[in-house]
Structures are given as C-alpha cells and as structure tokens.
Amino acid sequence: MRTTAAEVKQILDNTTLTDAVIEAFIKSANLFVTNSLSTSVLDDDTLEDIEMWVTAHLITYTLDRQSKKEEAGTAKIEYAGNFDGKGLLGTSYGQMAINLDTTGKLASLAQTGKTIKIQAL
Image (cartoon, rainbow, N blue to C red):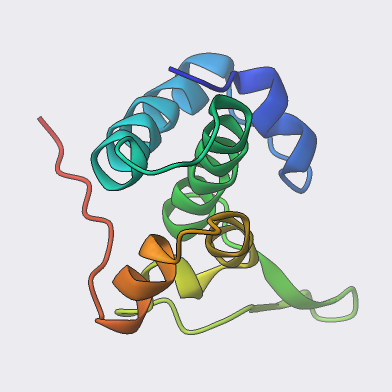
C-alpha cells in the first residue's frame, strides 16, 4: 500500500473513522490504483497521492458523505452530489484523483461510466 490512514485523515473532513476502517479502504484503493495505473508513466509519489484521494473518495462515497449545506435550526443536512453511477466524479476526492492522473486513464474510466465496485467478502 502506498498511503497511510494518517495521510487520508488529513484530507477527510472531520472523520471519526478508526485507522483500521480507513486501512480497509486503502486496501481497495490500492488495488484500484495498481490495476488502473501501475503500467503508466506516473512516478511513485503521484501514485501515492492518487491512492490517498481514491481512498478518501471511497470512504466519502460509502460512509462519510460530504455535506453541501448544514443548518442548525430544525437540524437539516443536504449532501453534496448525486452519487449514483458517478464513480470518481461523484466526490471532490475522486475528482482530485482524476486531476492528478496526467495519463488520463482515470478520466477515461469516469467518462465511460465505469465505477469502482467494492464487494464485501
């Protein structure tokens, strides 16, 4: 694995997830980045950054959804984005991963409608 739970926590908005939970997402992100980009010309530091952002994307896509608007009176939260079928485009973290990939492979995956699928064991 290229990234750490501590690095992922630095970019997540106020997460309360444990390192063990984040590390499970890192494992999935590592597989995705390795399978999608390991044969590319990207250096190890860039792959590490992409893996960190993909991890945050996976967490946000499933557990810690990003809020777009919060109100105190009558406690209302509006979540950002429509997550259905958006893949990496569904969160700002996924969009950052796409931006860091100068090969365009992640952008291509996003445009073809392919999404990251995580299957529970």
